[in-house]
Image 1 (cartoon, rainbow, N blue to C red):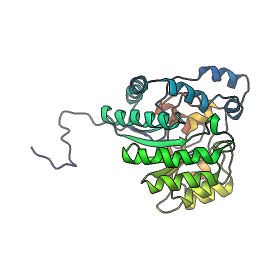
Image 2: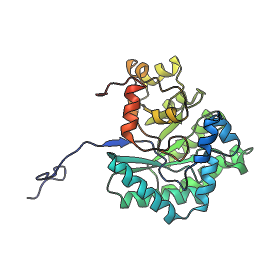
Image 3: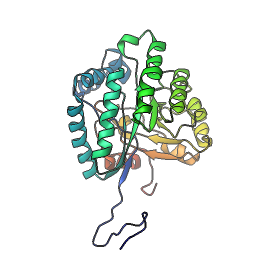
Image 4: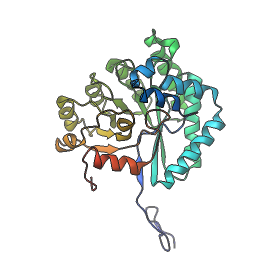
Length: 298
């Protein structure tokens, strides 16, 4: 029979619930297991980043990889997380940090959207960190994002969202506002990395920018929690990434305080090659209950 568009004939089929993983970096060239050893020897995330590790390490490897190599490895990872119960994914760029690298990543994500059997959303994260060439010239890199990356991204419809890593040693709240406002001008909605290591005013900026979500939130002051519980219209969602806290041996996000204060909460894997090398949402849920005291029904 001809059914209306919103009705699916499920006769002789199974219907299963699935996880929505709204924060991943699943497109990458290589894992960073050498940094795992540094972590075990006591080096912090910030110290590893300062010696050219972390995001810069991934960017070097990504810029050497071809579009096909990136597509094939990410496609395989996506099939693995589907088997673990993931039914929708968000994927960020941010390991290019050059005009060519960022566009290459976003084109790979666009191809994954077309070829994968689950819904995928793309996020432009050119503002993940400053490339070495712009370490002392923040304005130069911000202009490159706004003038050289964003117009092409809008023209080729390569992204749904814009993101920025607002953190000490990365992007300030003011720099984030400049970049995100430019993205909004090109029709991208903000989803932002906030309060992972420090609370530096990113949350106020994110709410002012009407961010769809603020992600990480390992470091939340009482004022931050109050601010997020008020949200901004239409309500900013706090996305908690407990596997990142677990892997970096950081205190877990204050989920109970946030829920009790009336904040809207989502959970995601932060699947990436360094600080959360797994897209297993079942483990995310287990940590959320065991370590963050969230209830299974939540």
